Length: 49
Image 1: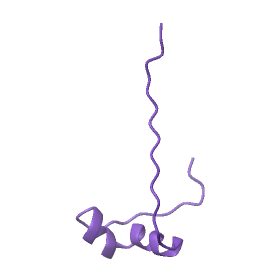
Image 2: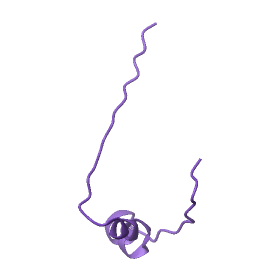
Image 3: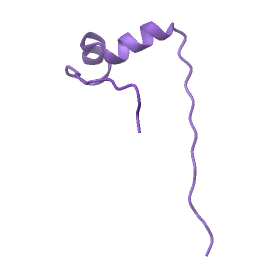
Image 4: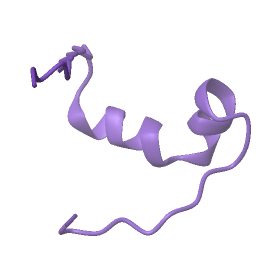
């Protein structure tokens, strides 16, 4: 049997300091305005497993 799975790799480059990107991803002001259409709340974790 032949393996027919396809792997796609995508990269994006953001021309902004890491602090600004983190703020945009985690601040309800930005997520409501540009991304998710509502407030975003979460608890960040140091180790994602």
